[in-house]
Image (tube, rainbow, N blue to C red; front, side, top):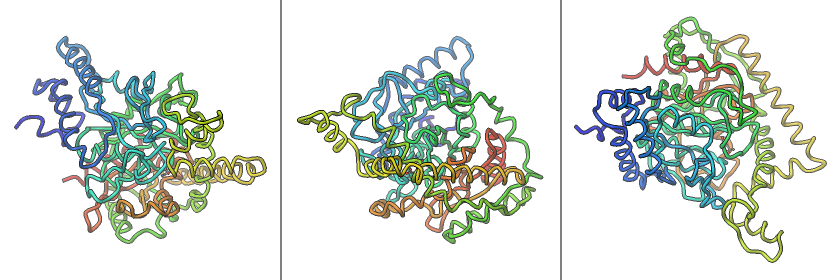
Length: 481
Ligand code: GLN
């Protein structure tokens, strides 16, 4: 059997073994991966751009190092895809928006740079909701992404493309971004692992800003170990992002192999009200499994959870309305004509932005306007502090929290697109993690009767990704056949 038949089931470790044992070269793998991804893409529309030249150059560097017997990085030769809100030098970065349709950034995001330093091979950029605003990937100006597990369903959003490519097997790992759930929710919908690190754990230099106090970069992978390898490569202080933290990066691999016996896991009762019964049953079974592994399960309360959705949908649009002011037709790509300067701005933004982005800009501008700032934005920030305090209190009692990721599995394409409020409900369990800035992840834990994946969410204390990975890894290892 040729190695290219195994592309959909590759892991970082298998790529490494294959390269070091000379079963294939990094260049052969890069070529086969891009050919495969291009052939599969019409099914899902998950990639917006392929980057063969960049991939082949990166792969050739890896082959060269191997031939010379030099150190090869932790991601040597690994085919990787990057969400299209993360900038890549000279490689089109659209943010899923018409307004940046042909934008070629002049620099690489720090996360991208670090991955390539470790030998990763970037094969393409993935589709997403416009400027990462959405929960279904239907807000992309370049068409929706289809869930590889059920092609009539959404892959989740906004990092739908990054989740889909890993689920489909056209990339081994990918990068996404999470502001209110955009890594965990699509990971859950597509049946892959998705990690939102602590706020400040990974540099956002080169992540196109949506809501700066909430934005995170994080990995998707088919295993907890692979997600940890990617996070280790991108985590850590970066002088180009003043919000990136100095906190040392743990050796996740060493720590995640510790057993979970004796760990205390909290179930926040607010997250189990109003769950669809099927999702509830699958999550319940996962909890029982962790109990069998020796975890002590304890009910806890995060009493301000009920305000999270309203709080998020004030803060995120407010910050977005400010961040998106830069797309004015003067800089970046598209420009529409107008009689006056103001007309040019208006026409550019009118045809460049889609309806959800316009809705957020209007909501955010309103929430920040004189007279409303205190009533909305300031109030939401105060509520956010209460939500963060809930987590601090809970972590005095338990090591990690376990919840569902989403109240329901992947829904049908078109099902919620005309009802923004129903769409916003997809994020009800994930927004809190971003508001509190704690690390959180989705790990596959079962499926619905229709075969749709369901994810288990794990939250840990600030900068304690190692504990989160430990729970996830022990769960995954003991449930995989
Ligand atoms: N679905 C949420 C929103 O639409 C979260 C998006 C995100 O995390 N980028 O804002």
